[in-house]
Length: 335
Image (cartoon, rainbow, N blue to C red; front, side, top):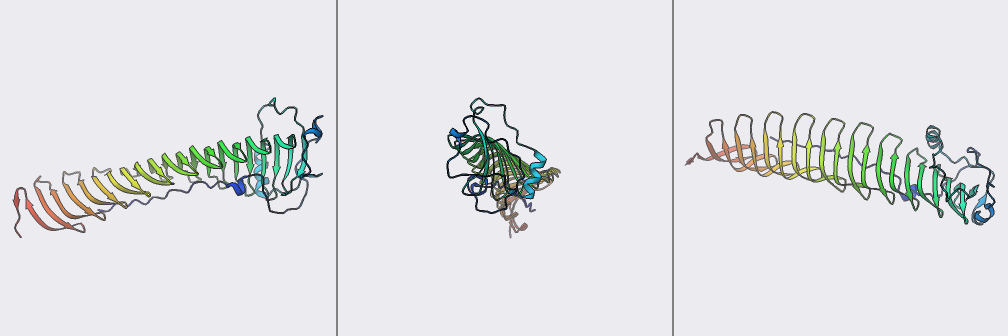
């Protein structure tokens, strides 16, 4: 009997990496049109003291860089909600819009010539960041709407997602959890539009460590992951009542394990590449037992068979079929 496990481990949500997720660099082009209102650029007496240097240019209007997808998301979400006023930012001037050499436009607070405090930045590729800045980099809480409509909202450090945050794709898939340097790292949860859910540990942007994966069809795996694959010790339960508890490698049963069926059948032994391979014992609900060697999912080699009469017979199997009996009970069987 061959039980083949066909697993599909969904890929991790691929958040935009540094080249898209960060806020400093842009090479796209667009036409400047006013779409977002700005506040009075001279809000405090410290405007001249904190104003940016000559490398940025004051402009009159905010360019219409946002893509249609980004606009739709922005209209749905509304303005980013900042924390209550923080003492360190209350006296900083709100200036802009200012255009950087790379084409990005910033409206917000400044300190000693650097973006610092609350502010928003629009990039030529059509993305929008709103949130906190510290010494010219996104730091603290913030929200980035990507040009394709994907969203990251959470904590930032040095222009990277870092800390607790939520990433939502346009198709509805999302990740909620810990981040480190723009990658999922630590405890997190992924949810897919079809209802599949992963809850567990991540390392460098992929599933790695202990976790639980629930598929849309009701199947569940609880156990170890390694480099985005089921690997190590774990338990997989099918929706029809089958269950495997044991060792895994590259999303397949591999090593020692126990497989049980709802009707009472049970196999305990070695697996390789998702199939029984090596020594194993198979028990039927009516009391019959096979103890012996397996290959490629079938009885192959020497083994002992105990029938319903409880008489033990030793034999030799090939590709799942008995080739010859060697002994019956204590008595050898002559050829």
